[in-house]
Length: 353
Image 1 (cartoon, rainbow, N blue to C red):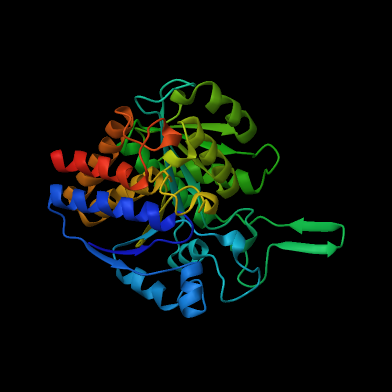
Image 2: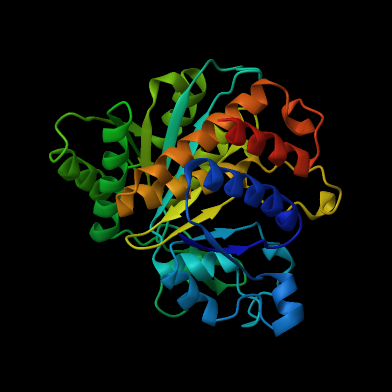
């Protein structure tokens, strides 16, 4: 398995180093052949090459089996500068990574303020209200007058069908329940199409139950009783908000793994930002990127019919849970370890089997 590793900005290099240590331990434990190809994106790439993403990286990632992308400091990039594009956007659009898979679960050893739960948000990743992914040219936000802005949302049947199918396929491997989150009572045409597509796909999965919940009610239901939910599927902006909420409900946004997946490519990406205020201090929590990489291994194993990779992904998740339960974690999770040692603690559990 060839992986392109791009550490990114801020805390990215630190959490990537810890993640690679875990990945190498998993490779040894499960006899995986891994070829890690390291390069740079973000501010370091701009210093070296005059651009935050070298265009040739797209073909390299497309030819590889996956990408590990650390967080990037896009708020520091100059808007409109063609040499300062967001790496996440660059790969998401270039590789058509339409499904953002965001698991959230509680962990032993951490307070479960809302009870125990284990759910996954499946978020459409290529259209919706986001102004940078709606138009072939131009932008979906228009300044009509100095005091009037019009923002447009694109919803297509093609994208709704494929994100719904991704959710049902995932639910088939889990507890066989999908919840479609929408606002069809107000956005009756766009979200109406989304719900129609979910119902259409549901007919191909008779063992999976489909529920439908309006998004504002969902925010109450998921806080009141998160154990009720298994796989949640929704459009882009709703999924972005909901997945941050569920990650924080689990104990910390730093526990949120994230996989951006398409038909032929996938990108492991931490769910949080680059945290430049703590960069270089060795205190950042690496768990989000570690869990994201576990998702990438599992995706590759299923796609290629190589169960050892899926087994390694599951083992990493179990090792993370065990380490957190034993207090072998960073301070934000109640432990006392630094970034490198927190990764080493997970790696050690994999080596012990």
